[in-house]
Amino acid sequence: MSDEEHQFESKADAGASKTYPQQAGTIRKGGYIVIKGRACKVVEVSTSKTGKHGHAKCHFVAIDIFNGKKLEDIVPSSHNCDVPHVTRTDYQLIDISEDGFVSLLTDSGNTKDDLKLPTDEALLAQIKDGFNEGKDLVVSVMSAMGEEQINALKDIGPK
Image 1 (spheres, one colour):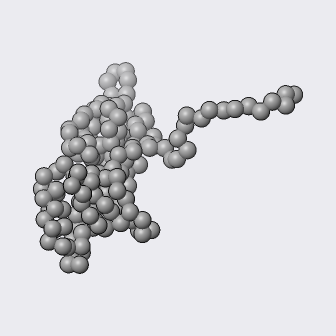
Image 2 (cartoon, rainbow, N blue to C red):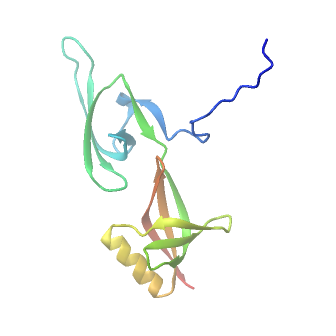
């Protein structure tokens, strides 16, 4: 046996996987699916019957959870699809910087400063107006597949 030490260069991410497999036939409206590398919320599912040969097919119509674009995919119902791990976390809004980034307070008491204001005009206006009025605001941040975005707002009263 050799006494040499072997060096392994790991390119893998040590964290949990960004997606998990799920059979296409079990994915329902309101669930999540990865289409063209994007995390999407399913808005419509239709299943076609099998032909003389082949599989039943599921036709998914889904909306990208981060940019709102509509995407479609057709997958045999017995095959696996990637389903993203989608998490929603609430943070208290501390500050909004001039360059469009927000400063958020985490549950552990640390600050999170790497999120931009949302691109949705209505939500953006609500956040800015509420912050300028001095209200205590809690924002919901949705994260999936390494992306994060503010997607909702709660007013917990004046400071």
